[in-house]
Image 1 (cartoon, rainbow, N blue to C red):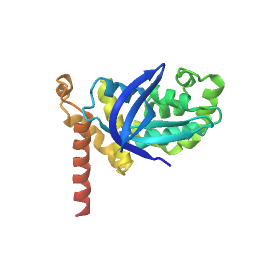
Image 2 (cartoon, rainbow, N blue to C red):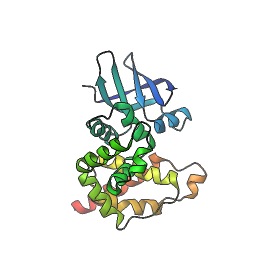
Image 3 (cartoon, helix red, strand yellow):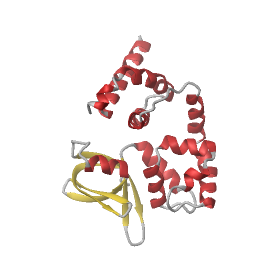
Length: 225
């Protein structure tokens, strides 16, 4: 099984609403379908390093082998959970993750927002009912966490900053930091960041991640004493 890939970006292209990269890994070219958000970052050179790493889901069919790539393990696992639902194929799974963040999907499940789920191409009323019912049981712990987080959640009005903070939360989870400590430091990190930096194009996800990891490691070091 192929879990992830690290290699040099050779080419990227779009076919209808599908987004692809070609990655050179040790002399082999891997054609991988990716999410639109990552495709746009590559296309607009928001990611300067062309040596990229993707978490992969390999789907083998009778007449083809398909690779789907994600920038975080959480996205990959969420995609796999979506595919386990009867009637949901890979393109609907990618469509859901193209349109919404994982946090937004979990919120839609919690609130049974069928209209939002049905806004994804290929999803009708019956499928939205099935998605909400089955995903609610699969992500019970995440829904409970979102409810607890909402009690004292800080508000971020800037959608770009909000997206970066969501990505930061998922990345820190994948690095094995606990939800409780991540949730505690995010408001602190947000207050530390000078929002004027964003207007000057100096604020980046990498900078937020570095600040968060330094803060968490410092806190853990203090607790260990």
